[in-house]
Length: 372
Image 1: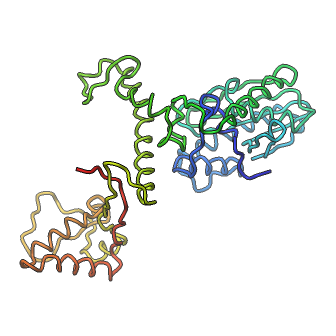
Image 2: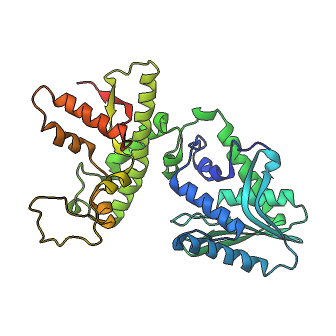
């Protein structure tokens, strides 16, 4: 069994709407947090978790224990790998308990918004089908989606006699449509576009989503959105839905254009420019150690009149210096240099801080720019 399925169960809901959907590679903070919490549920431990995350794990464990309490001698599986539709796809189900001819399948969802109910959920359909295929003695599967952040559990019971054929047909149809002509199939823009790797080149987004940015559900969207221009919260909700799709598409287009230019392709009307961000303080603790310390903050009405610098508490330092603006620090020193030595002053400051490992050089990145 390959590590990752081409048509993974988690992507089937998106492919059912748009057969051209292709999952974007990589991860993000939300996905990493979900993986971490799933592992904690699997291990049955909340050790080291903040209160909010620990509460999520406990909610999941309570649901698991409630399921097991209804079974006599269950086989319990955490992260069980299932082949689905005879091997057309495969995936890893979060939790499964098998007790004779019945099974309980659970999908832990750490999302902050409600997900599709189990009876309509393509991912649940795929895993339920996999359970029926893997355990021929199982006749009923109680599938549940547990959303601890919502304190919400959705359940649905599937039967082999009544649902197997429909589940199998649904998953095979989704995969067959996604396989036909690959990426040449026309795209159907929807909210899942924000997770698709084809954003920059998708004709569906170009031809349909961009006009939606100007006209949402038949209502014109003004250039500048102000409270007086937004008659209802419902309109703003639809506008935010459009923005959530369009902004990642814009980012994807710029990134793709930059890579094309770096590869030697000329884009009419544009050129490759470079921007260097300011240096970043690498060791703020070293700066704090160099300053006079104080156990308490100085009163607001106590003004400095010369002499040693006033002391600073760790709390004041964190508040004031979450980030140090290297550009402004350069301006301060450059203003003290004579004409003709200002460039040398900036270089000297950079060397001084870099030699003491107090800053990292800014990263120079290519970016696509409009010709004027």
